[in-house]
Length: 312
Image (cartoon, rainbow, N blue to C red; front, side):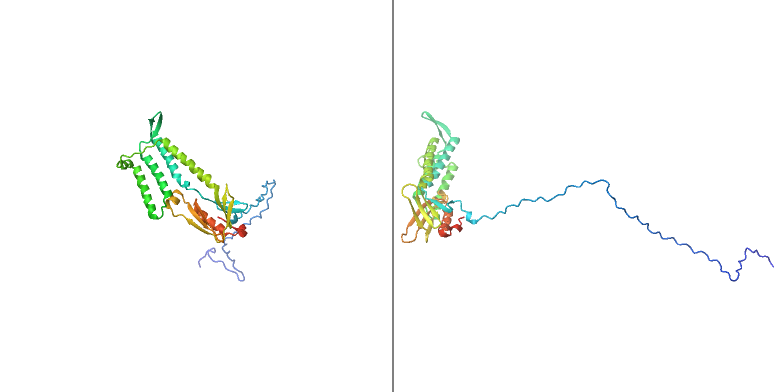
């Protein structure tokens, strides 16, 4: 029998004994999150400077602008007297339409002074314009005003004829052909010195201004709600008429007199009612269109209801 090394033989288990158990492999331990220490309140050890409290500044209440009352709005042609609006109508004389004479006279005097030449006449030097067109235009304007003031030009056809004549004369003077045309009738030439233009224009302006701003205002008409009065500055007193059932007629059919020379003037005819029926004629009223509209509103307003009346 061969000898066996006892170290190579398995150990013999004795009955009633438990074999030793092998240890299990260890699993990695789960790391628990570290607990954060509770934060302790921090107290300021030094006082902190706080800004002063801001309080809202109360603005003073703004006054509420009320819309303007319609009773206080009056037309600029109407003046208020003792709380009553009064419309004044001035009847101008025919001299009002003569303003082109002095206006063109001053214009020709300026052209003669700046475009003319000095000539020795007698013992004194005089200014003359080398062209005779200035003198011809001045006399043409003078004669045209005389024609318009004495001949009633009515209708569109008559107005177009006069406008055509004016246009032809102005074009002939502008192209310096007027002297050529006049030479066909005997070499007619008109020359006026600057003194003649100034004298005629100044005399005409003095007469025109005295009539328009002084003498024409000595006799006028005042229109109030429910009443029309004819006022005389000198002489007789005044006449008043009731506006009940009053009829107004506006005449502005003369093209050159009312539109060209009068700049919107016209004639007004007023017809009263009642037993003493009268026809009132007020010629040459400036800006008659808007004044008639105010006139119609004022005569339609009763005096008892005037505090609520409105003229605009």
